[in-house]
Image 1: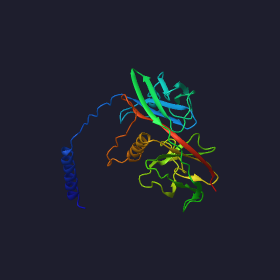
Image 2 (image 1 turned 90 degrees about the vertical axis):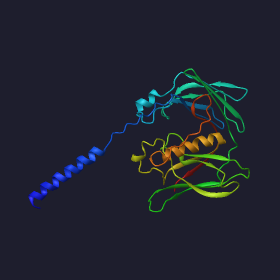
Image 3 (image 1 turned 180 degrees about the horizontal axis):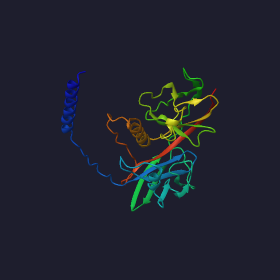
Image 4 (image 1 turned 135 degrees about the vertical axis):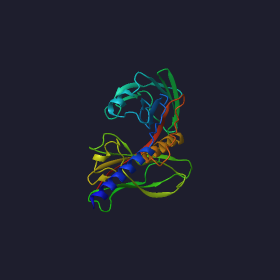
Length: 291
């Protein structure tokens, strides 16, 4: 290229860049700071004591490292569960199986099928209340492991299930691998309503969920189970309010990384200005060896 034309080309390019820069405009978006609220994650299993975790909400673009999460824990709350007769004041306990590792745990009331359990929380000049029930468990018909195509040893748990004829059943599924998982973890897309399979028998697969979504990038087995795993499937019935919370929460978790999807309004059954859920689980268990 002739040096004269090269100089003209460079000058033209710089001029276009200057023109485009002049068209740019800095846009500042003022994102309001949300009202500080207490977030509840509480549950009572069939034949087990109640457990409640209390934290605070945070701004959408707030820091979410471990230090910030520790500061969100609500300590020294009064947490009471009652079944209409007995009152159980839960004790704040350190439990490293969870994060944050502080939980309020009961010792007087256990979950029974068909009963209603009332939760009262007094913390930071707030009083929150909720109620839940434990529906009758509906066990799986059978469960087994099957290696997926193009995988040497990884696969999914499969199960057959028969939904009762009465409409209005709601379910949540968990799994746990002996020696690998410290506690039960909900499967991917863990909640179901019987709107489309009421009274039917069918077969379905379960993808293994993650205890923490920050660790999935370093887990080559994420979503899968492996030959040799001993797996316990925890199939739980839940009431509608409990289902609505986890359905909307999972929609937000799954769609939250997509900027083209509208945010989901997460449904809560906590009254008094709090967020989160208080839910009962009617659970049954199946154990299988992946082979």
